[in-house]
Image (cartoon, rainbow, N blue to C red; front, side, top):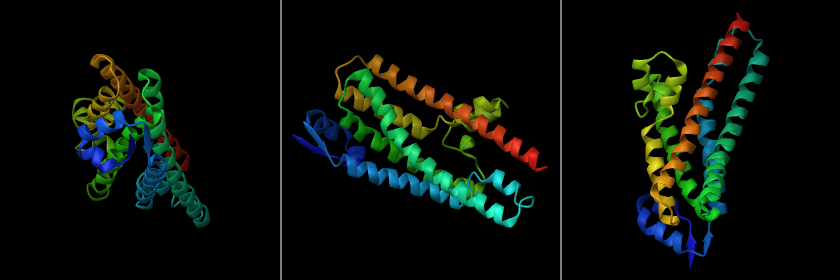
Length: 227
């Protein structure tokens, strides 16, 4: 049996397509979908950069830098966000697939189909957040879809705000989706499936909080040097 990857149908008719993926001897259309979703990720992150999201360090230096240098910095910032969009897509697609393949011995191509849906949902989350930032000024860690906004009322500690800011409704849906897919594709006890998926996301949330704090530190450092 040959299964042709279709992300929308897998998203909307999960049980039916998981059965087809489980029984499939060959998965097709994966490479095309990888290029498509990677390109979409680059476009989304490029769009956010074009709108100036994340460019606060540059804005603070606008009056202190020569015009030519400032314009060059903007070009490098835009190029950096495009590269980040590429690396983000590759990480989401290949790293969890590799981890789940090693842990549960599931076909790598079948896991890639699952992660392509995950990447699609994450990009939808970012697209929804962009107007919240542009028109309301909400940073990602205090998005109404995340637990960060609740954490900000309970503590001033940046690590916990960023950590819980990474725990969004979209992330929780992704956890249930991954558990559902893995449990359907392999015969293993559910508690081990939950353990593996939750540990992966816990590591992701911790790394997100650490990198966000490092980014905040770099912004402060740049601002101090500018002054």
